[in-house]
Length: 446
Image (cartoon, rainbow, N blue to C red; front, side, top):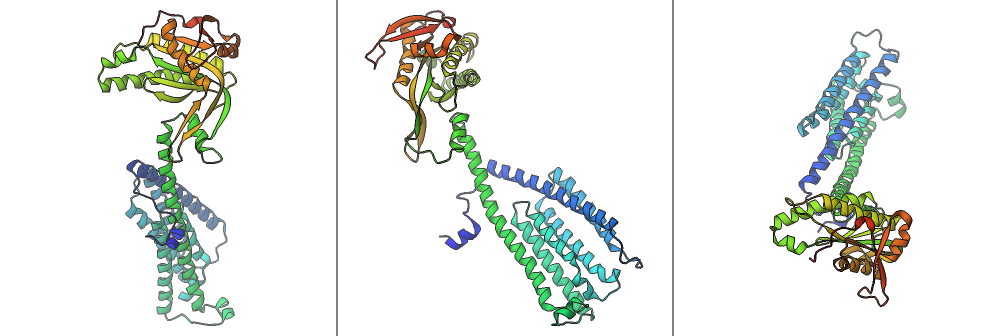
């Protein structure tokens, strides 16, 4: 069992190794981070070059001027990194080598100061240029890889130790315990040098720890994002957006009562059609059919709440607001009729579709358990729409709507009263109508 303290420090580890597509997405993010690092470093080098060009030269009498050469080397290295980053050629060994070379160039520049200014070797230990090593360490934090931060930090600490050793072996290093003497001479305060090394290592450790935590969060976020995107394909995009942006977790029983319109659809004669097709052909046909009618549904603001075999439950003004929901439900039904009259599927099969529409107060929300939920609609008005779809077989129509839908749709359509029927499950008779545009040849029984 993992120690709670370690989990608190490093964050919750991934529950399992991420799948290949998640790793590919993270790799893409890392490549983009490397391009960002290269551009930031390029901007820094250009700034340093401009700063050096504008600053007065304090060693004008010295022929040895290493700064332009080191800046030039940094610029070449950065341009090479930019090219390789954009071409996705920066392999881990090259990245590690680049980190070490950057720090080595910086340490080499610091080492050269005692030659440039004709001073004893310990002179360079006072150079504020050491602070730039923290920039190189921080740059590596732009990529979610603690390895490169650690490499930069260790290279910086090792470089400074090497400079200390060189100064000690030069025979020119005088050690002092007097802070004022240390600040006003070339003497070395051992504690100060230890502080510098510890500062480099501590900053490296803190950034690396933060990156380990961030990396784990990144893996979880990308994995959960991919899962959410995949699962959202099983529900409408509007419902997925509502769930993911909700102020609190969706629970069983969460729902709201709304005046909405419900459209049930069903393919005429589907049982007979399915007998003539193989399972693979049947699934392919249904996918093509659902893709075709979904265009009409989306166009008029409907939301596919459920697939039930070859049937669909489509709602308007539930997941998203739609003041014209009744008219849009009728428009959707008519668009489906037009589409299925003109198209054929699975090599010439026409899939005529019966539709039942009703408008009224319904409950839209989540049902199920805490572990598994289904977003659907409930209420007597929903049942009436389902009954009307089946009633098309009797009335010889393809679209039937209740009087509530006709009234709510307004003058947008011309309706023809078909009959007044007692819908199964209701005691009072219900007047049913069909849009005149939907009148067609009599439907055959499935």
